[in-house]
Length: 365
Image 1 (cartoon, rainbow, N blue to C red):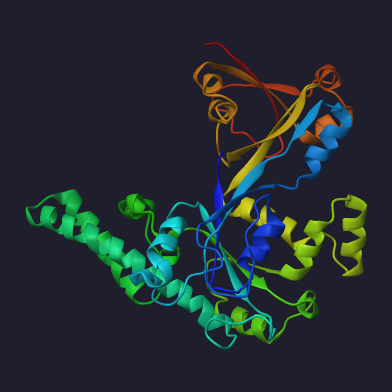
Image 2: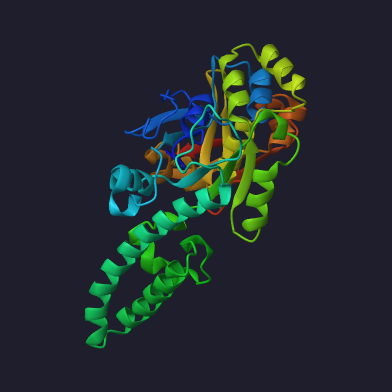
C-alpha cells in the first residue's frame, strides 16, 4: 500500500531536518522561511524485529521490509488559507497525504530564527490549526451551497446532509478540528469527498534539545497542558540527535551512539511505528528462499483483500490461504516443520488476517 505521512509545521521548526533523518529523500535544511517550496518525498523502512528473525531463519536471497512515504511540506504561515506564503499550494499538498506529522518547535536556539520572533509551541500549533480549519470551512461552505438548493425542494437525503454539514461548520468555526467531532460514521461520510485537512489523523512531534530527551522543558510542559484532551498522539524527539544517527551506517555504531544518550532506540524508529499504528496498519509476511517480505495492509482485512496487496490476480482468483503464526514459525524454524507439527491452518475467504501472520496464498485465474 502506498501510504503517505505529510510533515507540516511553521518554518524553521525542524521539518526538513526530521525528513532527512527519517527517509531516503533529502530536503534542504536552512535557517530561513520557505526553504522547502516543492514537497520532498522520501521512503522509510518500517522497523520490525520479526522480519529480522524470519530472515535469520530462512536466509533468503533478499529481504524486503514494509515502507512508508514521508512528504516534507513547506512551512505554513499565518494567512496560508488566503494564499499567504504560497499557502494554497502547501495546503493542497497536505490534502494528498493519509496522515499528518505536525512538528512543533520546543527548543531555544538563538542561531535558528523563529518566524514569529519568539518560541511558543501553543501559539505555533494554533496558527497551523487555524489555517487548516479555515481551508476546511471553505470546502464546507462550497458544499453547503450545493446541498441547500437540493434540500429546499424537499429531498430527504439532502436535508440530512445539510444538518451534518452545518454541524461541521459550527464545529470548525469554534476553533476545533474535524477529527474531534462527535458524529456517527454515516454523518461523517457526508464530508468524505472533501478530504478535510483537520480530519486527517495527526501525531504532534515535539522537537526538543538534547537536555529534554529524558525530561520535560518549559515548552513541552506548556504544550501538553494546553492540549491534553485532544484526540492525537504526541511524540518527543531531538532532531539534531536523529540527524547524527542517520549519518551512521554501521548498526553497532548506531547502538553505541544511542547508549551514550541513554536511549533504547531512535526517536525516528518510534515515529515510524507510531505513524504505522496511526493509520491502523498491520503487517503480514511471505517467506521463502527467494524472498522474505513484509506486506502492509489495513487492520481487519480478510484474506482475499490481503492477497490483493501482492497482486490483483491473487484477490480475484483466491482459493485459500495457508497461515502460520509468527510464534510457531520461530519455534519450529521452517514451513516444513510447522506442517509436521500441525501448525499450518488452511483459511478461507472470511479469515481476518492477523498482525504477524506468515501467509501462502492459493489462487486460480
